Amino acid sequence: MKKISKPTSLLAKRWVFSCFPLGFCLALSSCSTPTSASQPPPPQSSKVNPPSDSSYLGLSPEAATSKATTAGLRSRIVRVDGVSKRVTKDFRPSRLNFTVEIGKVTKVTKG
Image (cartoon, helix red, strand yellow):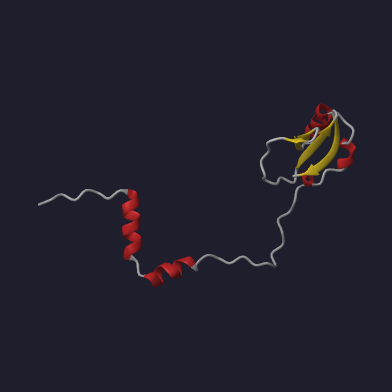
């Protein structure tokens, strides 16, 4: 008699999936609770809206980043003298993006 080895996890998953009737699989996929469009958005922290973004304009990049750090905000320099830096595309409302021209911050955006 031939001994049957245990299937690998991937093969076991395929076997289990193929053994269930299609109706059962569809019933399981509809068990998740639908989200309603009328639900209120999650509360936002006070760090999301800094008091004044224009207060960073005209500062040196070092002074602007240290000012943001003391305010409890993250910051990064996204553009220097017309050359874009490599940055991630994720949006973080409590992060400030600085554009620097000739050693001074000329533009501040959130994200």
